[in-house]
Image (tube, rainbow, N blue to C red; front, side, top):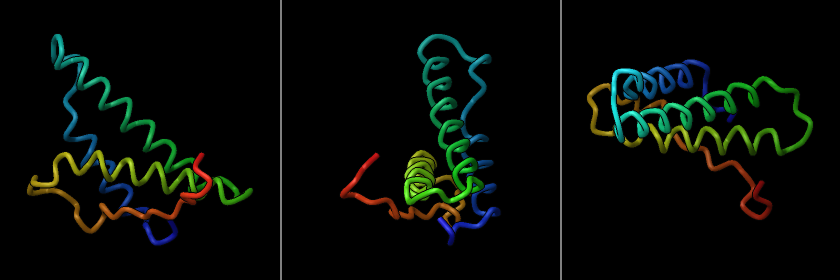
Amino acid sequence: MERITEDQINRLVRFVRDRIPDPASLQGEARLTATALRVAADRQIFAVRFHRTAPPANGATTDVAAAAWNLLVALAGIWHDHPEFPADAAKATFEFDCDAPL
């Protein structure tokens, strides 16, 4: 996660949030889908920001931040063909320990 800058995080967060429509403006299945996407994105954003600023207690902090970042990158990938897709910011890290998943 150290190689991911705050600017990259901010650009990817803005890009993802701008692509998810406001659920209040939708109805039915579209409203549920937009709500689910917003909740998923917001949880990953919160986890990335929280764990990047948390004091390093052990490797788990980095693992959680990297996993949250990777999920946010995957979510952004839904719109990879969009002309504003921040490809230089959307880098997966895969820093987490696959032998000891959370």
